[in-house]
Image 1: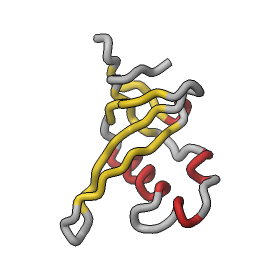
Image 2: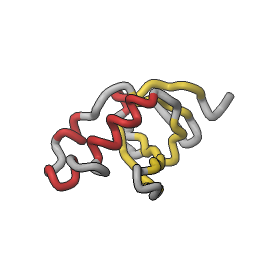
Image 3: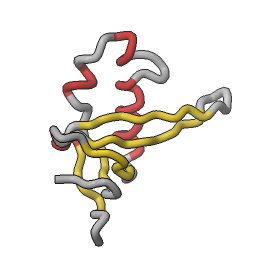
Image 4: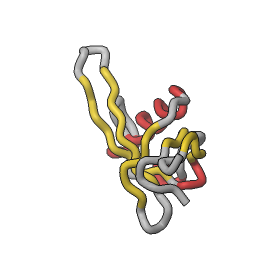
Length: 89
């Protein structure tokens, strides 16, 4: 389905993120917060890894109010993203 180098846009929160324990899911830099930021920004993110089950891995970074840059890597199910541009074009 997707391949490394494709650009995708995150459209919805994956069920796997909602199923995470609260310590990983919630908080200022929790996974749910990061995924919601990806959705809110609405910009394309490049896939850097694809799992055998179809999940895509995305890397991103945010600058916090204290001017510290936080880097994140998140896995998102294929049905929660849409293709923006293919790596083979």
